[in-house]
Image (cartoon, rainbow, N blue to C red):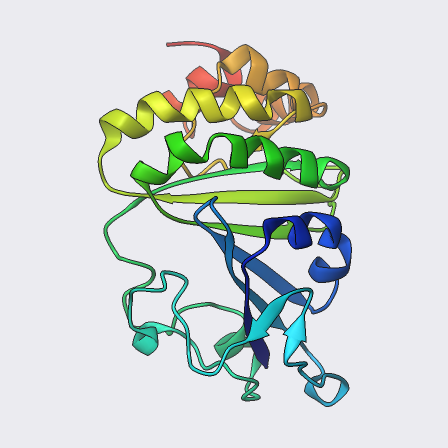
Length: 238
């Protein structure tokens, strides 16, 4: 089950970030970088949760919401504290329905959780540059893992996701600026989304990359499963 709220005061989100993000099994902020438009809280044990009318300055939602406030929530999964099986509540959008806006570009960067507020403040300072090309951003936290090539390898992370309007030219100019702002935090990109980080920089952010390359050399010595993307980003070859 879940609870949806709107936090208008961004400072409330910064000052209480840990408390907000630990308030449920899955917590997502949706923001256009002017304010924190929505926070969605999802729980595995609904009997342990009593929604409050106010939550760190946020007001409890009175109707079903879409991450984009101007769009109908028809395509979204059930909200307002209605219990249901995890596979119908953990996703934001219903199976068989158009997710988000449907026609969009995606980028996502993972920064150490200890740097979460600093990273968010850096993105907020870029809001005037980001917002003209953005539909919405989602912020979520992810536990550390031991998967060598995972963006969350060995560090709990904040995932900063961007859903951009489908115009690659301005987005391609914006991404390097975002990446420069997140560089002090060693941001790792989502492998399946857009990024422009130089291969040598990207490779330096994965401490187990040499081990991964050895594994690849052993099981795929002729590079049958390699493509242009992997050749460039993992091996620095064009």
